[in-house]
Image (cartoon, rainbow, N blue to C red; front, side, top):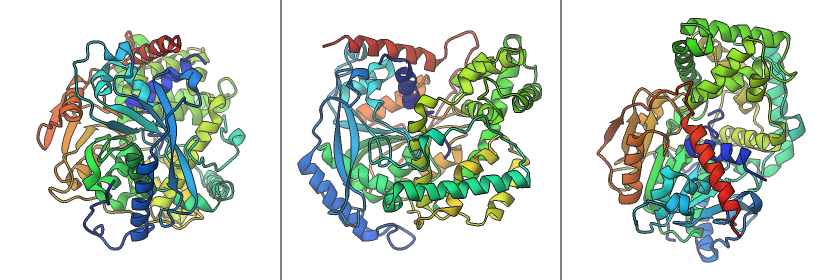
Length: 560
């Protein structure tokens, strides 16, 4: 699911702030997963997980200063946990995952002030999605007001999954060659352009094998779920409290299927559709179709504020303004770096978070008036972050390609996406090029596990979903809710921002607080009204909370 890591509420707030900041028992699954034998390591992988978790329980995690301690508050500490590269061989090669933590009540006065006394409830582990998202900065949300009650009750724990950051990092190309800008982004590509992208996808897949070595096959969602079980044991938790956003919901659901007796509470925020027949080729087709709906939502909003932006009074007129900018950038890239590809990539973010809408509309309007600086600031590659971006893309590709079969004949991709692009041109072909290396992947594929639990086996869990989410379309939440017996689905009606937890919707946050702090759920389903639309003349939620977090970090940085 393309790019879903960065546009969750917790993840984007922390990333925004840091960018501006100064420098155990046996799992009781009781059965083989429905649909046949164990996939990817089978029973040996399960036994290996038991061995690794028992070892981690004895070893624990030696927390201390974080590697980038100058940029993090003193309340955050870091450590590592060792996991097997191959769970079928738990005594073989080990890799280390980087783990971060802020202890319960450790968010400082800003976080704790006004928070009612609550009993400590152990560790809350978070994953921001991806695949390829790095959650090590997550504990810093303890400094934000929406998190103060949860931060008082839980140790907030983030980590870098296998392959990400310092956790046995993967790479597929030289980071210096990762950003290719300016670039094209045809909505209906020619045969010659398709041949060029096929050749690039083949080369990228070969590069992943060459730079990452024989261990490439062990970067999978099942391995991420097994790593989560080892992390639980290393933290000394008998049962896991976990919040996964976007892709994090998928391997969280795998964990719930494999280790239901080790679950305490689980929050699935913006759920991937776990139907094995859709992992991942079908899910990406569904994502492309859903982005067209959100692209229309964005254009309609800009049209409603024509008095501010002057881009047209109808969604069609706003679309024409975008096409005018695209044509102009194809002839002369802005700042020598922003072509149609960078424009499309930047405006894709409007599908993830409507807090992005004012910034995007303002940049487009300024560009068409002759000022390209806002668009360059918005869309030009952040070359200082090339290594992190390349690593994230490598992990994304490896996990999705390893997880499931993909069509190996480009004619299948061409047929399906040519048809889809007739009605959903905005993201369709960009999504193809992001995933096409999976057609030529040099590593054997898995058969996806059938996510499913029976009544009474898994404790109650909470699924959060926005009805118009594009990155993880709403049907995925319905499917996950159906498959996890006893789960509750909370829907933000009429909204589409990707990532709901502790965002601006107080109704959603109230259900989340009640569940995490008291274990209370409203029943099988509940609805919340949509959050207010962004206003061009007011700071967005992300801007406000990002400023608060930056200020809190500065205050923490003054402490000895």
